[in-house]
View 1 (cartoon, helix red, strand yellow):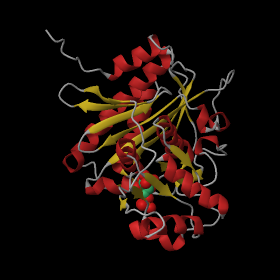
View 2 (cartoon, helix red, strand yellow; view 1 turned 135 degrees about the horizontal axis):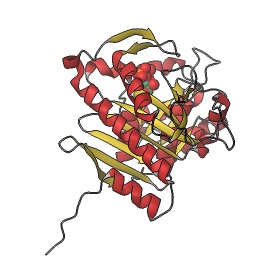
View 3 (tube, rainbow, N blue to C red; view 1 turned 180 degrees about the vertical axis):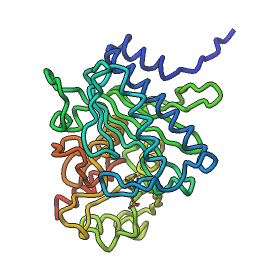
View 4 (cartoon, rainbow, N blue to C red; view 1 turned 90 degrees about the horizontal axis):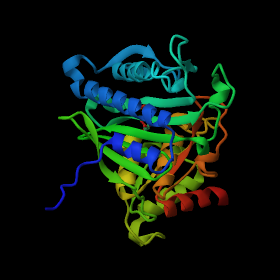
Length: 338
Ligand code: AFP
């Protein structure tokens, strides 16, 4: 009798990586399971939307000076409350908070640092478009008893784990601990994360690009050259036609790239010459770069590998070019030629 293939749960995946491959310590496995449970709760809040008065503005601004949505605040609080008591973490940092959130002394502290964008794509919330949660895990430096900003200032190559949840037609969790990229779908009947993909691969070639074209008049020459060649299509220097997608939520664009390839770009532009880009290094670009590289893709800021950038602050911004390796290398080469 053919043995029915039992679905693999997130827990089983992480236990096998911990026990059979020895790639992660038990405490990191437990941390990732707590984060996954928090994402499940955020997914439930997001799916209720108007029915639970979850939409609209919170009436406050975050550290970036951006108006917060109610769900931004709810997602942030959900992640803080889920993670503060378990004993896995020393501290947390979030797009929605200015400084470090140290684990209160009434709880035990662990050796990990958790960073997150609790709800990426806030402008999509009220129009029922895809949004998500992005997270990254670092190790607290040896001997540190009181975590501070400087202890988070580690390049992306030091990440122990990274992932995102995307709250779309399905709720998905995509993560890496350095052993490739695995995808889990939330089974809303059982409440479990069930593996629906493993060792995701980004094709080196693509016919799809992702950029906010409304900023074109502000781009620097290398980006103008690269995008103009794509738009010229089969009659231009690239000799083929390209398609464009823009979800306006990084998690949505990156997920599509992990599924079928593509290049995602958010370049710096001439409007604010001193601003290196819009996206945040620590809890958007670095975790997404880790995932994309683990899937065989590439991620640069136009001139260097994103994961080798030395952070200077929790909310550093960075230009982002990530996805299919051949395209990222081409646009990066154009920057270096310029
Ligand atoms: P919000 O969270 O403020 O909507 O920003 C989302 C984001 O940081 C990233 O997820 C998107 O790729 C990008 O900004 C969209 O930016 P534009 O709204 O300028 O297209």
